[in-house]
Length: 165
Image (cartoon, rainbow, N blue to C red):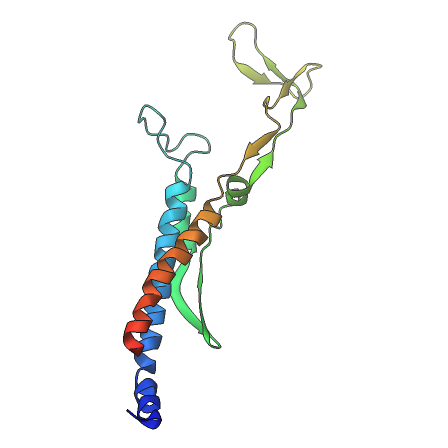
């Protein structure tokens, strides 16, 4: 095969290569979304009881990986771009971790008769709320999802070699 024939052959494979790269990018992004959702805090407690609808464990953040991410590749110059995202207000705090502090809340007290937490804005009482820990560690879902993206992309792009050869 001459050099000109090989160049012609490679030019004819460009559409196949682009389609393979686009498919690889989409598959890698979908797997990254799955990985991030998999690592997002559970919606069940240790006993298997459903936590949906209870305070912060609604399962909403887990669902937002799929709804906020954009797995369909967009061509930008010579690169394909996809987006892994979670637009929940507190997603970065769960991912990266955050500081916790103890603070005094005026007017908050435990009613001696009922034993319930009560709030009286004008009262001359209050309690300190917060946790004993000063930092809540992050789960780093995005970092793990990026690793998964790279792993899948390397495997998928092995198919580009098959098209070229």
